[in-house]
Image 1 (cartoon, helix red, strand yellow):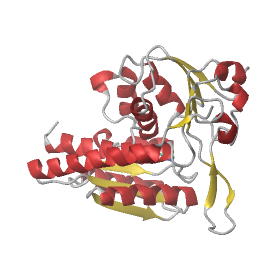
Image 2: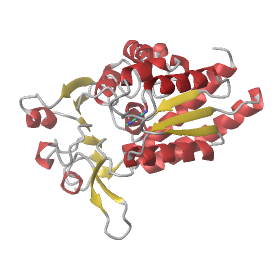
Image 3: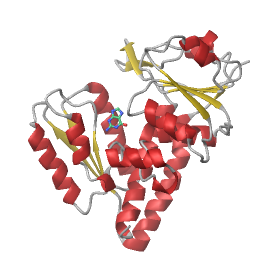
Length: 298
Ligand code: GUN
């Protein structure tokens, strides 16, 4: 049997259409458009490609969008001053500093410098705390986990009481998606296990999963034999494993051996075209939400 593909690219398009209508409503009611700034430090090729896509999508939705590229040797204080400028700019509702940052810049300092009300990445400790509390407290869910949850909901995957195993414990994906899936909420209500590099028997845990979420950043880490037949597999990995000889574009592979896994899983996300496009859609959603909240003084 071949698994059903969960096509993030198609689901993303539906969400962007919904957001376009919401942007029109915001404009008609308050005469404002959502404003998003992406700050990119240096020239990491993957970061350039992510930021370019984010800004392109913001443009297509009719946002006021700024791509602010800074040299790799910008000082930490200059970067903090730049963030402060955007914190005070009423036309900007969302501020995103693309990670990773060069080593001489403190990531924690930068993240905490962003006004939590404009932190559309959901990385500020205040927003991480709100996520942990759940329910109405959540202001901006982090984009990749929010995209994963949306994929589960829109693909009709049953989550209530499901065994969810998360491979990876990063602040950006593993930890927040684990918290989100355990909340008493739609697209959640699951029994969650987090596994990581020090886990003794990765295979044992993966095999128990009704929903396997893999965000380890290691190509082909999850073997097809580790997948429970019929399980839903969400592959968050985007690993550059080479360059296409003709197009010169990077060859991307997930953390799961897709070709063999799709013969065992019930549903699976492809790489590319699965989780990736959803991350951007959720960033846009958070920015539109921020614009509404700012417009209505909330
Ligand atoms: N680097 C990798 N993923 C992300 C993300 O979601 N947001 C930011 N700011 N940087 C990233």
